[in-house]
Image 1 (tube, rainbow, N blue to C red):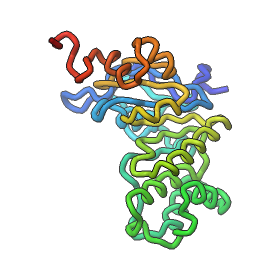
Image 2: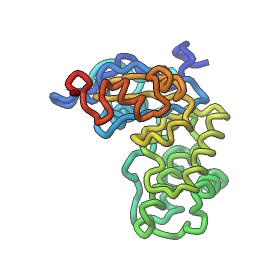
Image 3: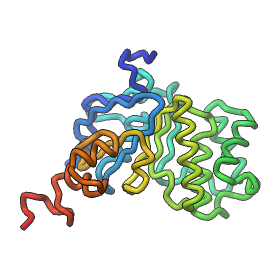
Image 4: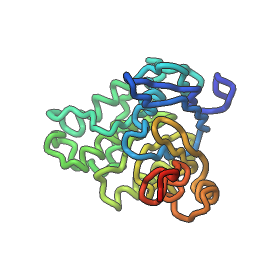
Length: 251
């Protein structure tokens, strides 16, 4: 049972983040249950990355609060129970694949060789252990970044565009692993602006201009919008026409 008593693994309560005149996160409320994959979907600039950074405790809210496993964020002790994969790879280019993974494992208090082997096996980099990160392709660096995120086997994962630059076959493997993790109780929030991965999630959260505009399963959101197309459903909830223009000004 979570200390907050709500049963939610991740919570946002009237969460705000303001940068000057920009309301990047504008009064978001969320309660994400354990053992589910949530898709955070919206266009670039909609506030997805800022929201994830607030939930992960990497930024302080202007107002409201974020909680992970009942603990108000930011919380340094809670960081060991969170996996966060940013859009840009946080890797040390001069270090090898194994050295990067070992470094992040030790930061999280993990020194298990078996855990590191499992992470490298998932991303298919076992044969590149000695290769410096700077000599990896963009897709391989993305795979290494995911391995560094998963190596300490945290109960909560925040993944910001995790499959960008990853080939289709490995993308399927990643999602299969995410599903296994969720089945074992891990809570996963995946940010994306690509709708074709949305059906792999248990529940979707549509965001635009720092606000949640709709939430539910993909079937529920399609039904509510009266469409079979998820992109069209997003436009419906955003109040936009098929060309992305506000409905009230559409001819």
